[in-house]
Image (cartoon, rainbow, N blue to C red; front, side):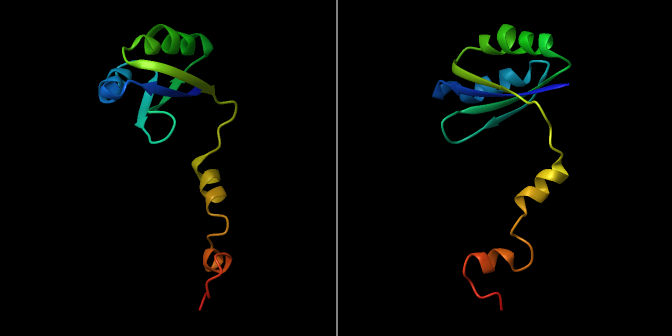
Length: 105
């Protein structure tokens, strides 16, 4: 399985419509509306690169309102469990407070 993240800039008045239209495309599993440099983050999961190319270039980028895209293809997947461990470093009992300079008592 090929997992790809596509970052999109969309004309402001079309963000909701573009998100809904994208969800109707087979291979697109999630669409997130986000703050920051991009308007939408699209998760694409396909069986291979040929199907990925079909989804992104032949279908997704033809949706009206998309003005810019950046495509990131994943090489390695880290499990939810591994990510949880990475983000919890320093947050063990008392760890965060002590690092922040607060008295743990």
